[in-house]
Length: 353
Image 1: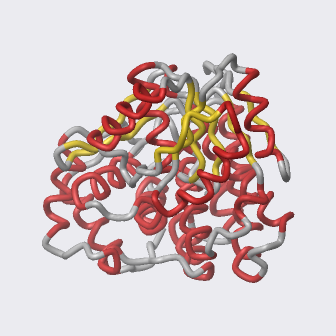
Image 2 (image 1 turned 180 degrees about the vertical axis):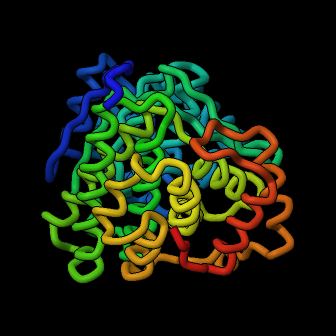
């Protein structure tokens, strides 16, 4: 075992437990703030307004305009509301889209963030921001992007539709898979990644049968925290590069894209580092990519990129963009190999590895 590593723990405050979202106002005050702008997507506007009402005089209002892939123009509109309301912090209620908006604001003016996740995205515990402008999605990592407080309340996930729960969980699992072979991995990130994968392996199938089981939802949210934390601790590789390409250029839905691509990218890298990905084969009862694909299929996740509206003609462009400025990856990346990988994902074929 290689014991040469660097480990830095996240400074974020993590509050976990049923009903803990009621403490949002207390945490606004604990971080020294007086006016919180509540962020949400249009679909969760009613929940955001209810939260703002509970905050009472601590509320600066609601901005319900968050959308997928964090477009820069939406962030600019939110910044105008921040300035107009004199908000001194944001409370992001929702999934990755809302969290992304809060992080984009913080990156620009270092506004404190409290995040209350309602999906399993995991981005709430990372100092990473992905934002889209002109059809291109780019990522940036900076300490100001990391939210100061995250409140995990499994009660808020009881109404998360089963399909969205499965896709969101697979999205979080992708963080853990890439953490296992990350260039800067360390013993703690590996332990958290494996534990996060085990949490989803047991919880996601149960959500399909008992979506309002609080204990099962808590297990999945626990997995999301673990997988998100490793995403914020170590670097990501091929999987995230491809998903950023598909989402930023072709506007494919974020979680579904991760869910479809994960078996293929994991299988691709298993050819180079089978020993690092052995825990996946063990947890999912088979080969790395094949085991994850079987798990996703059984859970009812989407399996083919063509089902997201991507045309076969788009694959050439996607392979070109994904290999122009590739992230570090344990297996060499070339345009032909990635084009073949995308073809398999487009058709929904089970990976051999």
